[in-house]
Length: 220
Image 1 (cartoon, rainbow, N blue to C red):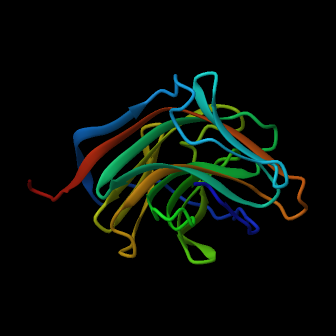
Image 2 (image 1 turned 180 degrees about the vertical axis):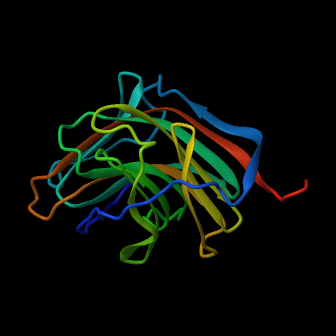
């Protein structure tokens, strides 16, 4: 079910501030809680040619990739308005990377959907994949909320109607609006950065939660 999207990942050097979210959200029913304690808890994928591997290992979901491009692993259950939260920890040495979660991923597993990403050197981005390209809804932007290098980070993505927001370590970092996708699968995603084929990324994900969510309007 997993494919590899090839493309150079460039991390921008834009300055950014956190500010406040445009909307508050409320949580509903828990749709999935996953601690990856069972080997079949998430899909397994391996490509020796592409240097990619994704598997449940030692109680985490570990994703590895070499060269430039994204790999992802999806949960085969449809959702629309949700909060997706997961703990993520870089295992590789090179912090020029990107990793995070997907929401509303296309069930055909072509990589389309919304990407909520952070990097080991302290940047974040919200992106949309459509067709053969990944475009930024918010460019890679620096945030002090992100713990760098091999530190543990908790990511929380909000996907409600056309509102997309990212929290890192319980701090709001940014948001975007987009109407292209209204439903799809949840997933995790990683990417190495660089076009020399030697860059690598190795990320361990744990304690995933997917919960129904809704926007709370002012005064309600």
